[in-house]
Length: 101
Image 1 (cartoon, helix red, strand yellow):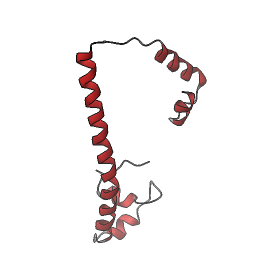
Image 2 (cartoon, rainbow, N blue to C red):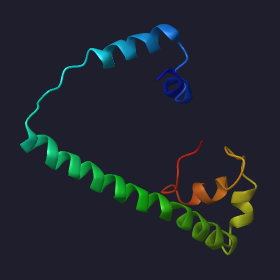
Image 3 (cartoon, rainbow, N blue to C red):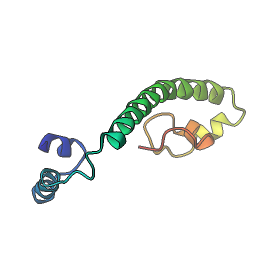
Image 4 (spheres, rainbow, N blue to C red):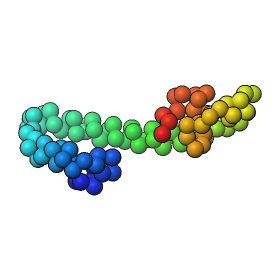
């Protein structure tokens, strides 16, 4: 479990230990199958929706890049300081794309 915390930029051993201890001492809120089972199904449905959406984000990024190349002011936006290594200009024009990293 430590590797998971490190992977998500949690580096302080004391904080990690507290989190692991909290997980180990957690108590279930309910054991009612009438509540748990439908919600498990909902989680599965949402995971499938997210997977589908993630597959389309790359497609949107490609289309934005194509449109950007045909944009009259593309050179102006390309000349702006970049906050990422590539594609920042397209995200300045269309902020609905992925956030800056």
